[in-house]
Length: 125
Image (cartoon, rainbow, N blue to C red):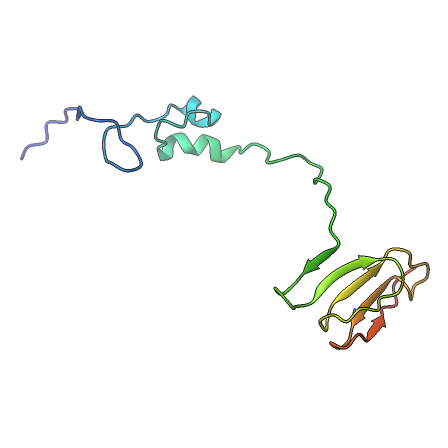
């Protein structure tokens, strides 16, 4: 076999996710814009986009509201928040943030057993 250094041309069906075929490579501008979904990317066209990636999301996190966050699946410790001292029976290690706590000893609690015993944290002022 001899090396003719001729460009290789192939005429055939367009490639899809389910079959092999012919596809077109994105230009550097198309790769940077990221708007073409019907062309292939090559390492040389990806380089410019990876060198200066755009921002993801905004600079301010979205607001969120939750009342319970389970740490270790069903039945595991949780992070709870509410008003008044905790009194429920929960998994050992559960944390409770008291929203109406007014002193260094009434702001946060931890469940020390699985039987409803809570111990307060002493927090900074």
